Length: 338
Image: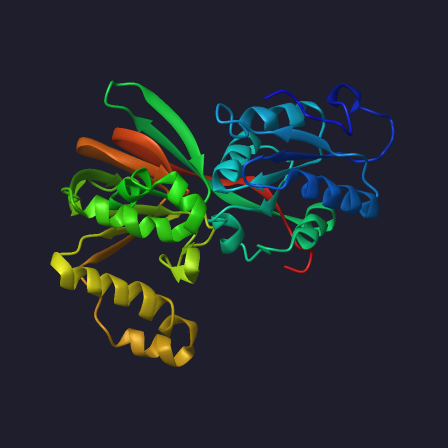
Protein backbone atom coordinates (compact mmCIF):
# COMPACT_ATOMS: atom_id res chain seq x y z
CA UNK A 1 0.00 0.00 0.00
CA UNK A 2 1.19 3.57 -0.59
CA UNK A 3 2.27 5.80 2.26
CA UNK A 4 -0.79 7.20 4.03
CA UNK A 5 0.67 10.16 5.85
CA UNK A 6 -1.92 12.85 6.20
CA UNK A 7 0.21 14.25 9.02
CA UNK A 8 3.79 14.24 7.79
CA UNK A 9 5.60 13.47 4.52
CA UNK A 10 8.63 11.14 4.73
CA UNK A 11 10.39 13.32 2.14
CA UNK A 12 10.18 16.20 4.60
CA UNK A 13 11.13 14.23 7.73
CA UNK A 14 14.77 15.29 7.80
CA UNK A 15 15.04 18.57 9.64
CA UNK A 16 17.70 20.46 11.47
CA UNK A 17 15.68 20.44 14.68
CA UNK A 18 15.83 17.92 17.53
CA UNK A 19 12.15 17.06 17.21
CA UNK A 20 11.78 13.29 16.93
CA UNK A 21 9.40 11.49 14.59
CA UNK A 22 7.64 8.18 15.20
CA UNK A 23 6.17 5.82 12.60
CA UNK A 24 3.03 3.76 13.03
CA UNK A 25 2.72 0.59 10.95
CA UNK A 26 -0.89 -0.46 11.34
CA UNK A 27 -3.15 -3.25 10.15
CA UNK A 28 -6.44 -1.57 9.11
CA UNK A 29 -8.38 -4.78 9.75
CA UNK A 30 -7.16 -5.10 13.34
CA UNK A 31 -7.31 -1.48 14.55
CA UNK A 32 -9.71 1.44 14.62
CA UNK A 33 -7.66 3.93 12.59
CA UNK A 34 -9.65 6.99 13.63
CA UNK A 35 -9.33 6.17 17.32
CA UNK A 36 -5.65 5.29 16.93
CA UNK A 37 -4.78 8.53 15.09
CA UNK A 38 -6.49 10.60 17.76
CA UNK A 39 -4.69 8.78 20.59
CA UNK A 40 -1.30 9.09 18.84
CA UNK A 41 -1.81 12.82 18.24
CA UNK A 42 -2.47 13.35 21.95
CA UNK A 43 0.49 11.23 23.07
CA UNK A 44 3.03 12.67 20.63
CA UNK A 45 2.11 16.21 21.59
CA UNK A 46 2.42 15.42 25.31
CA UNK A 47 5.86 13.88 24.69
CA UNK A 48 7.08 16.79 22.57
CA UNK A 49 7.47 14.71 19.40
CA UNK A 50 6.64 15.84 15.89
CA UNK A 51 3.73 14.52 13.78
CA UNK A 52 4.00 10.78 13.27
CA UNK A 53 4.33 8.97 9.95
CA UNK A 54 1.59 6.50 9.09
CA UNK A 55 1.95 3.32 7.05
CA UNK A 56 -0.90 0.91 6.31
CA UNK A 57 -0.18 -2.80 5.90
CA UNK A 58 -1.69 -4.95 3.18
CA UNK A 59 -2.20 -8.63 2.46
CA UNK A 60 0.77 -8.48 0.08
CA UNK A 61 3.02 -6.65 2.56
CA UNK A 62 2.14 -7.24 6.24
CA UNK A 63 4.61 -4.65 7.55
CA UNK A 64 8.17 -5.21 6.33
CA UNK A 65 8.18 -2.79 3.41
CA UNK A 66 6.39 -0.14 5.44
CA UNK A 67 8.98 -0.44 8.21
CA UNK A 68 11.86 -0.05 5.76
CA UNK A 69 10.23 3.11 4.41
CA UNK A 70 9.87 4.37 7.97
CA UNK A 71 13.58 3.80 8.59
CA UNK A 72 14.42 5.62 5.36
CA UNK A 73 12.32 8.52 6.62
CA UNK A 74 14.48 8.66 9.79
CA UNK A 75 11.77 7.47 12.20
CA UNK A 76 13.15 7.20 15.75
CA UNK A 77 10.70 4.46 16.71
CA UNK A 78 8.35 2.16 14.80
CA UNK A 79 5.07 1.22 16.46
CA UNK A 80 3.39 -2.01 15.38
CA UNK A 81 -0.39 -1.70 15.62
CA UNK A 82 -1.99 -5.02 14.77
CA UNK A 83 -1.77 -8.70 15.56
CA UNK A 84 1.21 -11.02 15.91
CA UNK A 85 1.74 -11.07 12.14
CA UNK A 86 2.21 -7.30 12.04
CA UNK A 87 4.61 -7.40 14.99
CA UNK A 88 6.65 -10.19 13.40
CA UNK A 89 6.90 -8.38 10.04
CA UNK A 90 7.98 -5.10 11.65
CA UNK A 91 10.52 -6.89 13.85
CA UNK A 92 11.98 -8.69 10.84
CA UNK A 93 12.60 -5.36 9.10
CA UNK A 94 14.10 -3.86 12.29
CA UNK A 95 16.47 -6.79 12.87
CA UNK A 96 19.91 -5.45 13.74
CA UNK A 97 18.72 -1.84 13.78
CA UNK A 98 19.09 0.49 16.75
CA UNK A 99 15.56 1.81 16.12
CA UNK A 100 13.18 0.21 18.66
CA UNK A 101 9.83 -1.42 18.05
CA UNK A 102 6.90 -0.40 20.24
CA UNK A 103 3.88 -2.67 20.60
CA UNK A 104 0.32 -1.39 20.34
CA UNK A 105 -1.38 -4.74 20.97
CA UNK A 106 -4.40 -5.80 18.94
CA UNK A 107 -5.86 -9.07 17.68
CA UNK A 108 -6.20 -12.37 19.55
CA UNK A 109 -2.64 -13.37 20.38
CA UNK A 110 -0.33 -10.53 21.38
CA UNK A 111 2.26 -13.18 22.20
CA UNK A 112 5.34 -10.98 22.56
CA UNK A 113 3.49 -8.36 24.60
CA UNK A 114 2.25 -11.07 26.97
CA UNK A 115 5.73 -12.50 27.44
CA UNK A 116 7.21 -9.06 28.13
CA UNK A 117 4.46 -8.21 30.61
CA UNK A 118 3.21 -5.25 28.58
CA UNK A 119 -0.25 -3.72 28.75
CA UNK A 120 -2.68 -5.42 26.35
CA UNK A 121 -5.83 -3.29 26.47
CA UNK A 122 -4.80 0.24 27.42
CA UNK A 123 -3.91 2.25 24.31
CA UNK A 124 -2.95 5.48 26.12
CA UNK A 125 -0.58 3.55 28.37
CA UNK A 126 0.94 1.68 25.42
CA UNK A 127 1.51 4.99 23.62
CA UNK A 128 3.04 6.55 26.72
CA UNK A 129 5.47 3.64 26.83
CA UNK A 130 6.27 4.10 23.14
CA UNK A 131 7.10 7.80 23.50
CA UNK A 132 8.65 7.90 26.97
CA UNK A 133 9.72 4.34 27.90
CA UNK A 134 13.13 2.69 27.96
CA UNK A 135 14.71 0.20 25.57
CA UNK A 136 15.41 -3.50 26.04
CA UNK A 137 17.28 -5.75 23.64
CA UNK A 138 15.88 -9.21 23.02
CA UNK A 139 16.82 -12.23 20.93
CA UNK A 140 15.25 -13.09 17.61
CA UNK A 141 14.75 -16.56 16.21
CA UNK A 142 15.75 -17.02 12.57
CA UNK A 143 14.26 -19.90 10.59
CA UNK A 144 15.51 -21.16 7.25
CA UNK A 145 13.00 -23.50 5.64
CA UNK A 146 13.71 -25.79 2.70
CA UNK A 147 10.57 -26.25 0.63
CA UNK A 148 9.46 -29.47 -1.10
CA UNK A 149 10.58 -27.98 -4.46
CA UNK A 150 14.11 -27.40 -3.11
CA UNK A 151 13.79 -23.63 -2.66
CA UNK A 152 14.67 -21.91 0.61
CA UNK A 153 12.95 -19.15 2.58
CA UNK A 154 14.16 -17.29 5.65
CA UNK A 155 12.03 -15.67 8.36
CA UNK A 156 12.32 -14.40 11.91
CA UNK A 157 10.12 -15.19 14.88
CA UNK A 158 9.84 -13.61 18.31
CA UNK A 159 8.01 -16.15 20.46
CA UNK A 160 7.79 -19.69 19.06
CA UNK A 161 8.22 -21.79 15.95
CA UNK A 162 6.42 -25.10 15.62
CA UNK A 163 6.16 -28.26 13.54
CA UNK A 164 3.60 -31.04 13.66
CA UNK A 165 0.18 -30.92 15.31
CA UNK A 166 0.74 -27.35 16.47
CA UNK A 167 1.37 -26.13 12.92
CA UNK A 168 -1.41 -28.32 11.48
CA UNK A 169 -3.81 -26.79 13.97
CA UNK A 170 -2.92 -23.26 12.87
CA UNK A 171 -3.07 -24.17 9.19
CA UNK A 172 -6.54 -25.68 9.76
CA UNK A 173 -7.90 -22.70 11.70
CA UNK A 174 -10.84 -21.02 10.01
CA UNK A 175 -9.93 -17.30 9.80
CA UNK A 176 -13.57 -16.21 9.89
CA UNK A 177 -14.21 -18.30 13.00
CA UNK A 178 -11.05 -16.92 14.63
CA UNK A 179 -12.23 -13.38 13.91
CA UNK A 180 -15.49 -14.14 15.73
CA UNK A 181 -14.36 -16.21 18.73
CA UNK A 182 -10.60 -15.65 18.95
CA UNK A 183 -8.46 -18.49 20.34
CA UNK A 184 -11.51 -20.75 20.79
CA UNK A 185 -11.32 -21.28 17.03
CA UNK A 186 -8.28 -23.48 17.64
CA UNK A 187 -10.46 -26.08 19.37
CA UNK A 188 -12.19 -26.71 16.05
CA UNK A 189 -8.79 -26.81 14.32
CA UNK A 190 -7.36 -29.30 16.83
CA UNK A 191 -10.25 -31.69 16.23
CA UNK A 192 -9.69 -31.57 12.47
CA UNK A 193 -5.91 -31.90 12.83
CA UNK A 194 -6.18 -34.97 15.06
CA UNK A 195 -8.10 -36.83 12.35
CA UNK A 196 -4.91 -37.27 10.35
CA UNK A 197 -1.62 -39.00 11.14
CA UNK A 198 0.10 -36.47 13.37
CA UNK A 199 3.25 -38.34 14.45
CA UNK A 200 6.48 -37.07 12.90
CA UNK A 201 9.79 -38.85 12.47
CA UNK A 202 12.54 -36.25 12.59
CA UNK A 203 16.29 -36.44 12.11
CA UNK A 204 17.68 -33.54 14.14
CA UNK A 205 20.95 -31.99 15.29
CA UNK A 206 21.13 -29.64 18.27
CA UNK A 207 24.17 -27.32 18.18
CA UNK A 208 27.30 -29.45 17.65
CA UNK A 209 25.84 -32.62 19.16
CA UNK A 210 25.58 -35.82 17.09
CA UNK A 211 22.52 -36.19 14.87
CA UNK A 212 19.64 -38.11 16.43
CA UNK A 213 16.17 -39.37 15.56
CA UNK A 214 12.99 -38.26 17.30
CA UNK A 215 9.36 -39.34 17.04
CA UNK A 216 6.92 -36.64 18.14
CA UNK A 217 3.51 -35.15 17.45
CA UNK A 218 4.77 -31.58 17.87
CA UNK A 219 8.11 -29.81 18.22
CA UNK A 220 8.08 -26.25 19.56
CA UNK A 221 11.12 -23.97 19.52
CA UNK A 222 10.71 -21.19 22.05
CA UNK A 223 12.31 -17.79 22.35
CA UNK A 224 9.69 -17.05 25.03
CA UNK A 225 7.73 -19.40 27.24
CA UNK A 226 4.11 -18.29 27.62
CA UNK A 227 1.06 -18.82 25.44
CA UNK A 228 -2.38 -17.15 25.61
CA UNK A 229 -4.57 -17.98 28.62
CA UNK A 230 -1.41 -17.66 30.77
CA UNK A 231 -0.23 -21.14 29.76
CA UNK A 232 3.45 -21.50 30.66
CA UNK A 233 4.74 -24.00 28.12
CA UNK A 234 8.49 -23.40 28.50
CA UNK A 235 9.05 -22.26 32.10
CA UNK A 236 12.81 -21.69 31.76
CA UNK A 237 12.68 -19.71 28.52
CA UNK A 238 14.14 -16.20 28.58
CA UNK A 239 13.87 -13.74 25.73
CA UNK A 240 17.46 -12.50 26.07
CA UNK A 241 19.57 -15.54 27.06
CA UNK A 242 20.90 -16.41 23.60
CA UNK A 243 19.39 -19.92 23.51
CA UNK A 244 16.17 -21.63 22.55
CA UNK A 245 14.06 -23.70 24.91
CA UNK A 246 12.66 -26.62 22.91
CA UNK A 247 9.95 -29.12 23.74
CA UNK A 248 8.84 -32.23 21.87
CA UNK A 249 5.33 -33.52 22.61
CA UNK A 250 5.14 -37.28 22.11
CA UNK A 251 2.01 -38.66 23.80
CA UNK A 252 0.97 -42.27 23.43
CA UNK A 253 -2.80 -42.22 23.32
CA UNK A 254 -5.31 -40.36 25.47
CA UNK A 255 -3.44 -40.87 28.76
CA UNK A 256 -0.34 -39.29 27.22
CA UNK A 257 -2.27 -36.14 26.34
CA UNK A 258 -3.61 -36.04 29.91
CA UNK A 259 -0.01 -36.17 31.22
CA UNK A 260 0.95 -33.27 28.98
CA UNK A 261 -2.04 -31.24 30.12
CA UNK A 262 -1.26 -31.87 33.80
CA UNK A 263 2.39 -30.96 33.30
CA UNK A 264 1.73 -27.72 31.46
CA UNK A 265 -1.39 -26.45 33.21
CA UNK A 266 -0.96 -27.79 36.76
CA UNK A 267 2.79 -28.01 37.33
CA UNK A 268 3.98 -25.13 35.14
CA UNK A 269 0.92 -22.95 35.65
CA UNK A 270 0.22 -23.52 39.37
CA UNK A 271 2.92 -25.39 41.31
CA UNK A 272 5.88 -23.57 39.80
CA UNK A 273 4.55 -20.22 41.00
CA UNK A 274 5.14 -20.97 44.70
CA UNK A 275 8.06 -22.26 46.78
CA UNK A 276 6.00 -25.09 48.20
CA UNK A 277 4.81 -26.04 44.72
CA UNK A 278 8.35 -26.12 43.35
CA UNK A 279 9.37 -28.41 46.19
CA UNK A 280 6.51 -30.77 45.34
CA UNK A 281 7.60 -30.74 41.69
CA UNK A 282 11.10 -31.85 42.69
CA UNK A 283 9.59 -35.05 44.12
CA UNK A 284 7.84 -36.01 40.87
CA UNK A 285 9.35 -37.79 37.88
CA UNK A 286 9.53 -36.19 34.45
CA UNK A 287 6.92 -37.59 32.08
CA UNK A 288 8.05 -39.39 28.94
CA UNK A 289 5.44 -37.56 26.89
CA UNK A 290 7.47 -34.33 27.06
CA UNK A 291 11.11 -33.93 26.12
CA UNK A 292 12.82 -30.62 26.88
CA UNK A 293 16.04 -29.44 25.22
CA UNK A 294 18.10 -26.24 25.02
CA UNK A 295 20.38 -24.91 22.29
CA UNK A 296 21.26 -22.00 20.03
CA UNK A 297 20.68 -23.90 16.77
CA UNK A 298 18.37 -26.75 15.82
CA UNK A 299 18.36 -28.44 12.41
CA UNK A 300 15.46 -30.79 11.62
CA UNK A 301 15.05 -32.98 8.55
CA UNK A 302 11.62 -34.49 7.94
CA UNK A 303 10.54 -37.70 6.23
CA UNK A 304 7.77 -35.87 4.37
CA UNK A 305 6.70 -32.22 3.88
CA UNK A 306 5.14 -30.77 7.04
CA UNK A 307 3.41 -27.55 7.96
CA UNK A 308 5.36 -25.13 10.14
CA UNK A 309 4.28 -22.02 12.01
CA UNK A 310 5.91 -18.91 13.40
CA UNK A 311 4.33 -16.86 16.19
CA UNK A 312 0.92 -18.36 15.52
CA UNK A 313 0.87 -17.90 11.72
CA UNK A 314 1.15 -20.67 9.15
CA UNK A 315 4.11 -20.50 6.74
CA UNK A 316 3.38 -23.49 4.52
CA UNK A 317 5.23 -26.80 4.24
CA UNK A 318 8.91 -27.63 4.61
CA UNK A 319 11.06 -30.74 4.34
CA UNK A 320 13.84 -29.30 6.52
CA UNK A 321 14.03 -26.45 9.02
CA UNK A 322 17.04 -24.76 10.62
CA UNK A 323 16.35 -22.45 13.57
CA UNK A 324 19.11 -20.21 14.91
CA UNK A 325 19.18 -17.58 17.65
CA UNK A 326 20.22 -14.05 16.64
CA UNK A 327 21.22 -12.72 20.08
CA UNK A 328 19.88 -9.31 21.16
CA UNK A 329 19.02 -8.45 17.55
CA UNK A 330 15.85 -6.46 18.31
CA UNK A 331 15.31 -3.42 20.51
CA UNK A 332 11.88 -3.22 22.17
CA UNK A 333 10.41 -0.19 23.93
CA UNK A 334 9.16 -1.10 27.40
CA UNK A 335 7.83 0.95 30.33
CA UNK A 336 10.57 2.86 32.15
CA UNK A 337 9.51 1.13 35.38
CA UNK A 338 10.24 -2.40 34.12
